[in-house]
Image (tube, rainbow, N blue to C red; front, top):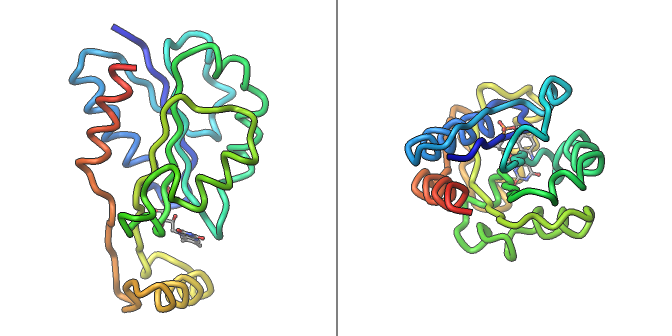
Length: 175
Ligand SMILES: Cc1cc2nc3c(=O)[nH]c(=O)nc-3n(C[C@H](O)[C@H](O)[C@H](O)COP(=O)(O)O)c2cc1C
């Protein structure tokens, strides 16, 4: 039995929801999982875990600066254990942009960091127009219009392929 930490960066909660699904799948394989927001990382001792998973969503083309800082600060410890990284974004709603080597954000991110995660995944995120500020809603609708996604301001839609998330959970269990 392994003890696994999933540390996530989210703005609207969808990366936490994906982390919770990973937790369910991994716990079914008889491992222990702790999920922690990257904002509370000071409260956890990374050395206590056998494997570390980092997950982060994209906002305006980037993962949060906290993610970069966390990785930089903990690079040696991450590299000393089985580890993985996953990115959540809506470009990944298109299957051809959902692979680590086809998703533009993950490709760029990996060039910006020194850590080379042992396992990688890209998951499609969620659109929740009613929840967004007027400004965010307008910009995301414009991007969706350009990329042929939903533009109805009432749209609340999860693009996440939960089977893909579950399969990644099994990869983590076995790595
Ligand atoms: C203000 C804002 C900006 C976003 N920018 C991007 C973007 O540049 N590219 C993209 O693919 N998705 C973008 N998204 C979609 C998010 O990645 C998606 O909603 C994801 O599910 C958010 O996860 P979270 O709730 O864990 O933060 C954006 C969403 C919001 C609300």
